[in-house]
Image (cartoon, rainbow, N blue to C red; front, side, top):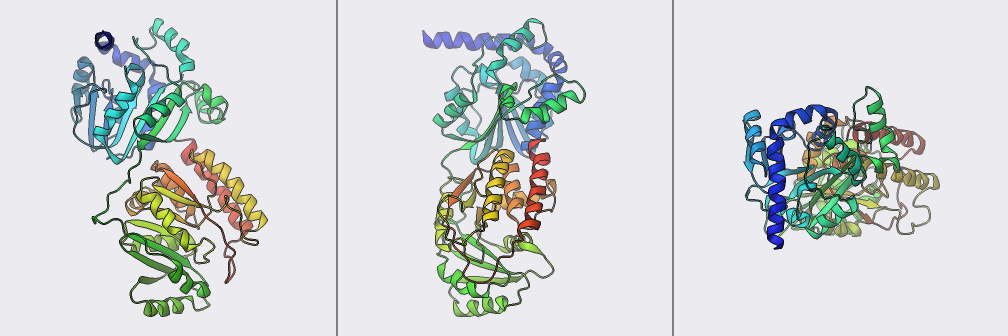
Length: 482
C-alpha cells in the first residue's frame, strides 16, 4: 500500500508539470529576477567548460546559462524534456527520476535547483547521487526557505508562480542531516534573496547588503548548500603505494634554520622533496642550502633563487611551479611551526578529511615570545572576518603552513585573474582561491614556537593595512558576488 501511495504522489507531480509545461516560459518571465539571481549563484560557483548534470532541469535554461563543456539535464516530466531538447540542442536532456538515476557518467558538478520539494524520499535521492559523483564532484542545491510557504502558495493562487502539488519544506539543518546520512559533507550553506522582486537599486541594496546581516539573512527566500562526497581523497595517486609530497620553504636570512629544517622534516608519502626559495638573503642562506644539498645526497633537496621577485607570495608561487609532488606544503623557514607536525597535514589531506589544510596557532598555548600581542589580536580579528567572508571556519588565516593537492593549486592558478595579484604573503591567494573552488577547509592545530634564529620579516602595521584591504577585496569579490 505504501508503494502504491508513493507512486500516486509521483504521478501527480508528473501530471502537474506536464499540464504546465506550455506555460513554463511565461512563469520564467514573471519571475525573471529570481531566476537571474539563481543563475548568478551557479555561474559564480561553476566555471564555464565544466561537466554539469542538472537533476530536475525543467526546460533547461539554467543548465544552458552555465556554458558547460558537457551538460546533461534530466527531469521526470517528458513534456519539459521535449521543450528543453528543442531550445538547447547542443545539450543532452533525458527523462529520468532523481530517486532512480540511470546515468553512468561522472560529473564535475551536480545541480539540484528547486527540486527538493518534489522528492518523496530525500535521503534515497541523495544516496543515488553517488552514481554520478567522483570524490572531487561538488553538489549544489538551492531550495525555498520554509518560512516563505504562505507567500509562495499565494503566488500560485495569483498565477504568479507555477503550481506544485507536493512539497517538502526542509530547513538547512534537515538538508544537512540528509546529506550526512547519505555520506555527503556540507562545505558551505547560506541564505540568499531577502527581496526576490526587481526594483532598480532597491533590490540590489537589500539582497547584496542588508541580506548579508546574520540575523536578517535567515529570512531570505532561498537556502543554498554546497556539498561533496565525504571520506574520500579528491585525487587518487598516480602510484599504487600512495601520494608524493613537495615541501616548499621560502627563506630570507634564515641560514641558522636551514639544516634543522632538513633534519626535522620527516618523510611524507612515497617520496618527499624539499624546495628552498631564497629571497636574496644577505647572511649566506643560499650558500648554506647548497652545503646541505651536498651533505644529504640521499634527500631530494633543491634551491631556487627568487631573483627579482618580492615577498613570500612570489616565493611560494615559484616553489609550487617547480614542485613535482602530488601534495604541496608550505613550511616557514623560521620553524616556528614544528616540521614534526607535517605528517598531521599529510594525513588530513590524503585521508579525505579536507582539501585545503590550514594550520592554526591559536588553539594550543604558545611559547612566550612566539607571537607579539598586537599580532595575536590582529590574527583573531581577521579570523572572525574571514570566517564570515568565506563561509568556512578560519581560526588563523596567517599561519604559514598550508597544504593542498597540486591539481587543485593548478585550478587556483587558472582562476587567479578573478582576484588579481594583490597578496605579498601568498596565504590569501591560496585561501581565496580555495574558497572560490569550494574546497573543503580543515584546520590543524599546531604548537607555535618562538623563533631561535634571525628576526621576523613581518611589518605589523604596513602588512596589517594590506590584510585589511584584502578583506575588502574578498567582500566585493566573494561575499557580494557569490
